[in-house]
Length: 197
Length: 197
DNA sequence: TGAATTGTGCATCGAACGCTGCTTAATACC
DNA sequence: GGTATTAAGCAGCGTTCGATGCACAATTCA
Image (cartoon, rainbow over all chains, first blue to last red):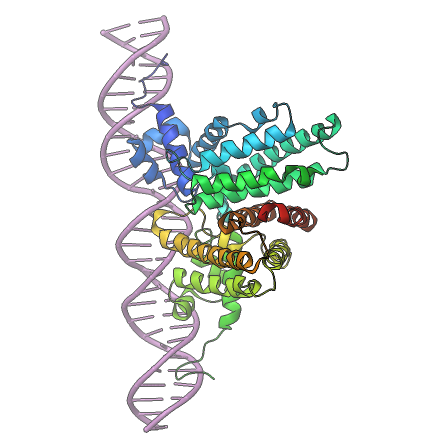
């Protein structure tokens, strides 16, 4: 249902997916407006009319990315172990999916920014912090449920598994294979009992 | 011993350390020449006379960084376990050292670059690959020595511990404490026997 | 002392950056 | 049909990017 004025001459969702792919591959500052318009096949003016600014487009692209594989969903699984294992396996598979850029956009797209773009860096850091909190809460619940020992420190367990997860992004970026990432996840999950114990 | 012409009016080593600190904190593209000259307290022309170009300055800064904590040194320790543990503990401590920027320069300083700077990205990736090879060779030696089972896959062990190490950089960048990073290393080392077995 | 050599300050280069004013085109509402 | 509203094309904004030409300063060597 188009609005009142002249209808948009391009597919906004497709353009947003293109932006997500570019930002995912090159990071926020690694992608220029000219790169975006070239890949989208639209003019500068259309991009700004549709998305407002580079930063707002990036935030929309990140929101789309985050919605592809929401962390909160994994927290509903019956055990914390399931949550962590499913999360790691799904993400590892996504990181090396040849249909999308390697690694995690939220981890990699704004690790090194100029001071002008600290807000963008903090935006991604905020998402990481939120996901971290979700997992910590899930681990605390597991402890309350008796799934893991009362001596378990949720913060440490989460920090350990997030380290592995973050590291997988770098491995993917460095071109490691799906088999290698799976082996890392296998290893990480094989030691679960010892980590939580 | 100065050369023939006019002597340099600033401390080249100090300027290089300043560049290292800036690139470490902000990444290659996150630091502008104007940032460098401002922090170094020199003019643009002096920077270019002394270092050639931004990329050559960056490479020198990375070489300096790498020399601070050389991976090869850890490989001479008596066991592969020592190698990995010392590496993780030393790096974790360095990543959260308040005297230097958080995280690892080689991991973080060029994760997202524009296409123009792929050479810089590949330069850091090459260092990561070299360190990875050193560790894999060390693990293979440990297997030959009987330190770890013959069934051990050096690639998998190295991939696992490098994942943890890479992840520590992101944790440091996100402001986690030394205690939290230490706890991750404690966990990672506590499961060594299971990982190699 | 004069020549050769090297570093510095100044001014600026061309290119790319993110972004926008203005005009025209295309639609919905009345 | 007339008007309001939104989108697209064109041209260009001011700024910053990395990098440099040139004149001058400061040193060594003959």
